[in-house]
Amino acid sequence: MAGRLNSPIWRHDAFVLRRLQTTVQAVVTTLNACGKLNKSARVVDFGCGDAPYKSLFDSSCREYLRCDLEGNDLADLHFKEGEQLPLEHHSADCVVSFQVLEHVWEVQQYLAECKRVLQPDGRLLLSTHGVWLYHPHPGDYRRWTGDGLCRELELAGFEVLEVRPIVGPLAWTTQFRSLAYHHLFSRMGWLGKVMSAAVCTLMYGRMWVEDKVTPASIRDSNASVYLLVAKPREK
Image (cartoon, rainbow, N blue to C red; front, side, top):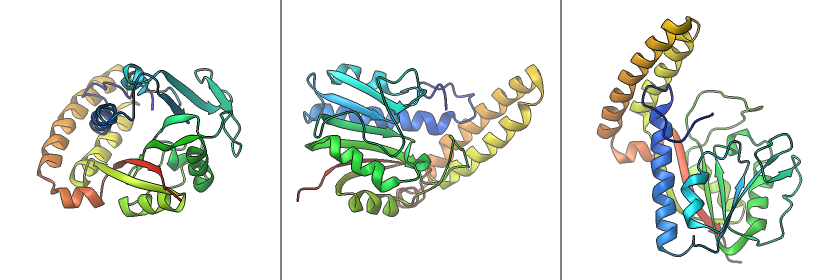
């Protein structure tokens, strides 16, 4: 999903992307304020893709390591699926994972590797989908409830400190319509692009209203995306 940062409102998935960006920014600010991110910190982006949120961390860490499968030329470090990262135990102050977990088959193995490279009091920032359309990259295997995602991390030896749900069900049903119109109009050349931009902008405004009126209790358990902050559990 290219161009996630500062997505224009006429983009077909802008509402979710902008809400996720705002939430990541808020978490980074909080971790910075409490000293978990600082000028000496190392951040590891595990499954970085095009590392869309790197710039949000640049002023809050010493090093931001982009790690991905072989073939991603943007990555600083490469690994093979099912193998360890080329990093020592407890060598990261923060591990970040943005929209990766739904594409991972061996979820517990992936989370165990996050824990291995984290310092004992380090932080894991992880976002993944609660509700979204199928999007293989190259595979797409899972969706979570908030409770299920917390249990997944607890099973891997993490203590979940915070869960931030992003975009509730009224808005994400409209988001799906926006995606459908975008794919329909994309077959119609330049005219379709104009029509898509207009419709998606209107849908963005509708989603803003719908998410405003959705009770937090409903959003918490029916989010499109969840962002979790966790730390390795003390033995």
